[in-house]
Image 1 (cartoon, rainbow, N blue to C red):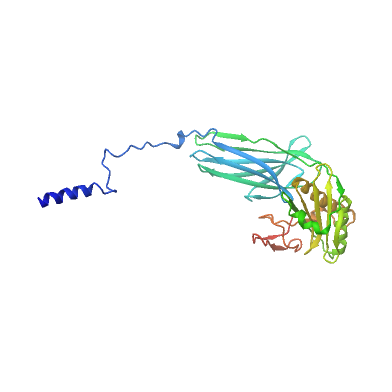
Image 2: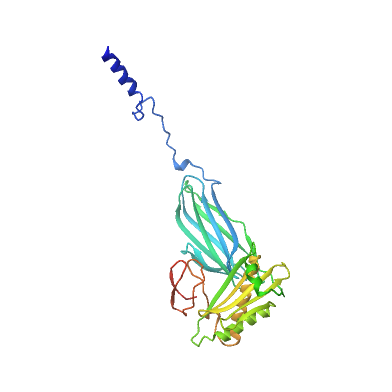
Length: 332
């Protein structure tokens, strides 16, 4: 009788084992699905957008593969109007060429190619564009070709993003120096900076260049708030008449750099104002025979992260970015 109870108990415990092997009846039949049978139509998307970032514009592309199968031989083309210059990109491995799509219409074409984009994956391309001239208008547009899992070539075109730089007009406005900090702390205030170096052999006269850059700011009708000749820095203020936005501008000479800084709630306006300052400076330096060509003006932004470099070491010399720690050579 004791043996019978012990056998029954062992049988009951056996039923509680959670990781026993299933029987053949319990095995579910798994159906194999070929990737070739997956329909990728409407599951490959290319989105684009443009937005101001610092003193430049960011044009970004997001390629998404929402299917489980990969796509291959991906080729992306971005067409950029001639008044915008590509200053850096992520990823940095791109090809650039200048082409004429229509008569007298010159554009830059940026090419990005990669072999494969796996299923349920995405790839983002960022193009940082520096305005070269104002009162211009044009469009940025992109397209992509790829081979889908059925070995067919497919193409997608993005919608065109209009880019236009309107002229601005500033009215002088007085701002007490004690109010500068409060203005910079206002909600929605955006900040931008343009920093350049001059690649010439002659002595860098800080007083001379400081007077030139402050005159350029005043010529745009900004009101001088305070000027520190010893530290080579000056603050200006004004209101842009079309938008009604107040703008704070700073001009300074520091570590061999010539810099303009601007703050306002209107970010595109900042880019236009700073571009105007840089272009005017280049033109005046040419007229005054301080430089032989615009190629002697160097924009001091890190080629990898876009951070403003800490100093201007000189043309052809290297400097390490104090943000991303990449070392680079100053060269146009």
